[in-house]
Length: 324
Ligand code: AHG
Ligand code: MN
Ligand code: MN
Image 1 (cartoon, rainbow, N blue to C red):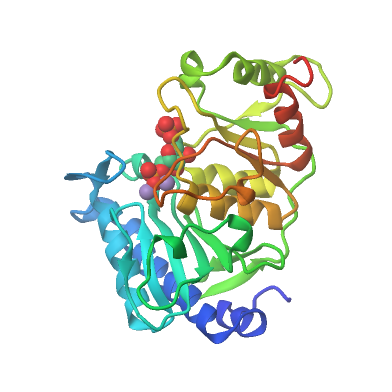
Image 2: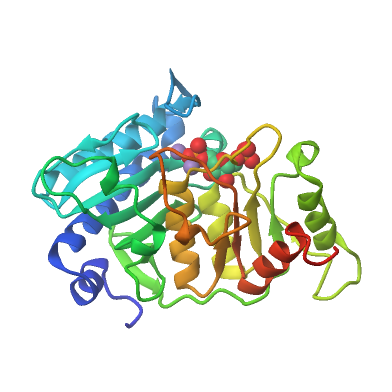
């Protein structure tokens, strides 16, 4: 797969027509979102929308705009049977004869919109299972059953990260508005030296989590510790760095968020698919994220994700198999 080929060419060579149509629709939707994001401060799309979503979170105007744009692009085709979105309470039926369903976080990292820090769109695509009316069961599939997953990072450049199940590839949006293959077959470092966690939550963490953070901070200790700490506060930004530079990102369950904060269906499963396809690992602290059987479309989970050996080291400590 040579650098510079277009997303369309890549999809022609690696997927079927219906899946290609769904991925292209999402990609084109993110090109439209990108245009809004780049000039957000000049239009009335920053700030709060004055509503809260099913998560009980304050909705930003760009959350809703991004959601509307993705729906608009998916509706142009016939391949997407339904959508689950962070911004909509229930399953949104789209095209009855569509073979695929999409779970999406239309705008990830909302708290970073107003400060022009990295934000993104995250998506998961499954082949639907039911016949007739689409229902939750079409979405409550394990991550290992995914047909495709990806994200678009609206950062210093606009990057589409994608896996259709044979590795993880990244495309950069060109000046002409085309996604071109820029990072073929990414492979995450087996061991990293960057950890990424919200240390502001330390007082809420279980002592085993604090043990691992102290392990990362240990001076002059192997392997190449103390680790550096990087935390952007957008999962897309933190995971993009983790895939390219190695290390571990984790959002544990805590006293304030008993099941963790991040959503299983449209944040943790797609990210875990991308990282696993790039040779990394991802766990909820007990089992691989891709093995979890989702029970509810907006359920949350703890997540420990990144370089295989670093994640393993983390699990050894938080499961108290080794002392920190
Ligand atoms: P969203 O903006 O879609 O709600 O996602 C925000 C998430 C995720 O992007 C990030 O990793 C996490 O929230 C940061 O949470 P804290 O600010 O609590 O650290
Ligand atoms: Mn998010
Ligand atoms: Mn979001």
